Amino acid sequence: MRITSGKYRGLPIKSPPGDRLRPTQDLVREALFDILRDKTTDSVFLDLCAGTGAVGLEALSRGASEVFLVEKNRANSKIIQANIKMLKDSDPKVIYGDAAVILRSFENRQKFDIIFADPPYEKHGENPLLKKIISISSKYELLNDGGIIIFEQASREQVPEAEDFEIIKEKKYGRTKLTFYQKK
Image (cartoon, rainbow, N blue to C red; front, side, top):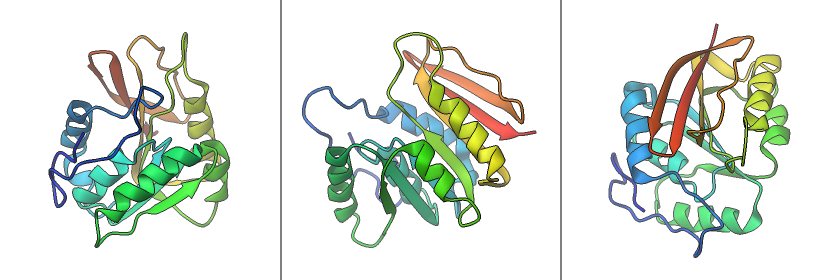
């Protein structure tokens, strides 16, 4: 697994052995950032359920001004730190903790242009974390004007509607689906 484009293009990304982690595939990351295009440049980017940090590091490579990586698994947080050490001249913020709790902690302190979430895929139905992210983002106004939430999930999972948000794009890549939400 490598960073696909930008300043750190080709940089290898460490991942834990085995299959306990399901990092966003290079193909999906490349497609994600091709869709985002110029929105990444100078953005404040939040990567929830960061795993290896690949998506957030890709955002940095493509010009994000600030990147926050949230991960609740301590072993994964150490992998993120090891991946960051390879960057040398960038300093994304790694936050250890539960995504929903961390989101609430940003109230009146931080706003984002892009919130990306890739929680563990659910076995059936929709993932409950998305509703929490949308609810918390609305209540605490965590998005800048024009900001978006991107949710990665299994393509078989249902995409929930969101009262204050509209789905602006949905793309499938094999067993993976990206859904883009923007405030109405």
